[in-house]
Image (cartoon, rainbow, N blue to C red; front, top):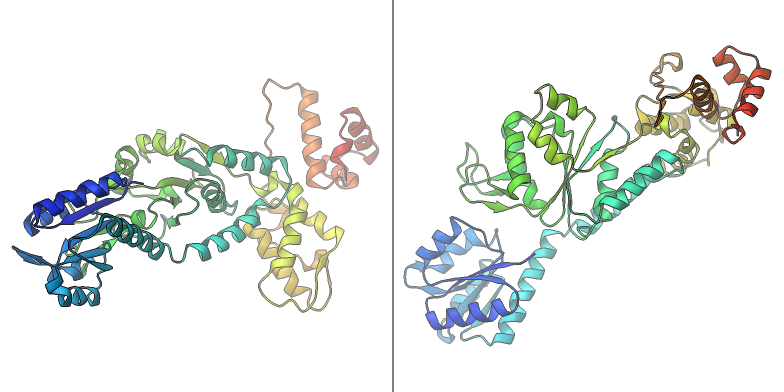
Length: 452
């Protein structure tokens, strides 16, 4: 990202020298010679750094500092006779002062330090967030199922490419964790990941939170506020449940995606949105778009690359590993090391998990409590939110051709063996055939590997 620097200095020769020198350092620089010109600049743009003379013919720089300092670092320029003013400027929040005429090397050094310090201050909690994010991501990435491996491969494919990603999946399947994994594997990983829940804000409040607002934009707006887009500067903005956005917000989000610019509420300046947008939804946006319930142009902007997070019933092979992870990493009493019985694992694997990984975590944590002093979690310690008999088992058979009846039978048998962890008697009971017939079908279709 190229930093934009504003120089406010009424000495025309010095102004031009500083502009020229900083441009050779790779910065974008604008030089003005009066406060009137500076105010016209601020009405259109926001620089990353301001360098200004302590005394200007048409304005008091010290009086303006409280307005400037919260928005960007300020370096003040002063002559030998007004060092006292420079000290007052430092007390008022200026980053540094330079005696005129500043040497090119000194100017470069102070500018670099000011920009680096501002970046560190902006991201002062980043490392802590990154550690927490990595831990949360691990909870989803545990497992070896084919469905999970496909998601991991898609994350690695799209992460280095700076395009918008739409993550689709049921609640509890780890959509935010996939978004974090994309961010952490991208070139933006050193900057912020900002998550926005599109369901939690009212329309007016959401617009202010996302885009920020100017002072006086509405009742109670007593100061300027930067929005979440600016908080994610250089990083990733994650829009969770994007299908819940109001139509007016959809239009403004579309503008961000199309132009890379936005305006704060009550503002007139076009600000740059240097963010990567990753969105997620548990709704069918394509169907909503076709029905006129979601902007089709926004849908196409959000979905150049789609990742579908698999429900837990489609990654049953991962359940034992996830269970072990939750046993080892629950955040309450660890007086007794817990383990789980094979029969309990079979029950967990056979359940269809309408609440997905989130529900599995809750079931294991309840079982830890209900098993009390026993080191072994047994089936009677498992309590499901919905009756197992009523759990919504969804059967999906996928072929790249019109399957024969034998192919359908073989695939359905494979799914049932996987669901019941190869327990032939249980599968025979479900299919209402003899256990001997199940043995025969397993051999016929070569499904021995599906049996544990």
